[in-house]
Image 1 (cartoon, one colour):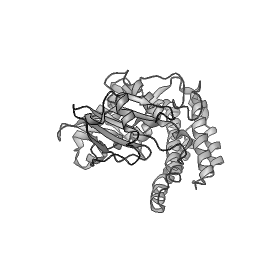
Image 2 (cartoon, helix red, strand yellow; image 1 turned 45 degrees about the vertical axis):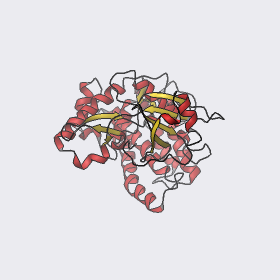
Image 3 (cartoon, one colour; image 1 turned 90 degrees about the vertical axis):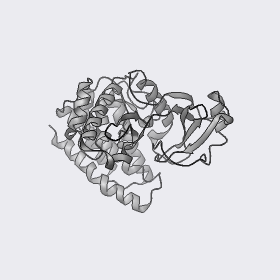
Image 4 (cartoon, helix red, strand yellow; image 1 turned 120 degrees about the vertical axis):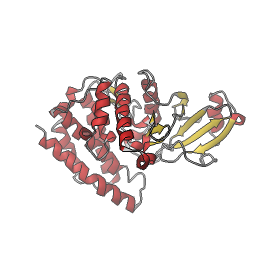
Length: 341
């Protein structure tokens, strides 16, 4: 989410909802200095609401419930609210705080989520300006932040939104439901995958026993690419200002976050991040179980990236670019499943 998008007009479908949101938060339209549509998201309508007294909020409104999407995406705002609430309990989590929320679809205008902002600019926007020493220091800092986030524990495994059903008592049950859902989505939307959905399902099932090594449902953001990491401060002194857009979180294996932290790459090469993660108490021993689970989570994320292009109505050029980048990574992850003893 880009907290520095330009503009002054609200999104097309937001004016009718805005008075309800503002009243719920105890303010009126006259208290608002400006409303700025934020770019960078692919699912929700996102507005920045700046008040005259200096308070700075972000409003998220999901698409209509009949909008095509993946099964796990239903009621995403419930997951984001759960992530923000959980993260606020662990100390120095650098996540937005929920101001108000209406997470129930209905005549009252829901669902919507209003949160505070976090300081900074998306790391992805500054990548070319960040020096190697500064990047090293911030990746280590990020490792400490993520390790703290992973200490938050949920009441069960799976998506807190309930999109795929109630939370499960085991991680194997939850993750199997997650992969089954995205493979069902692939079949439903006629997505061309590198291998047939049933073959992919069987290859994941063959190694699912390692999921039983996960006994605690940790808070997993699962979208920690640089666009969702905010950095702030002058050049040479930048710091991690925020971890945002936690709408795709689930309760599960903290190792799963290593996938988006090294998107299309390998977290084992990120020594700075791992040093900070370990210093804050995070456990990152890359034994056979962890490497197999990492390969499974890569498969899951890459399947999402491939399948979502169809309900998103991506252009042929976008679909081709995603397939060219992601399909080989999916096949490599599948090979890793079989290569790990």
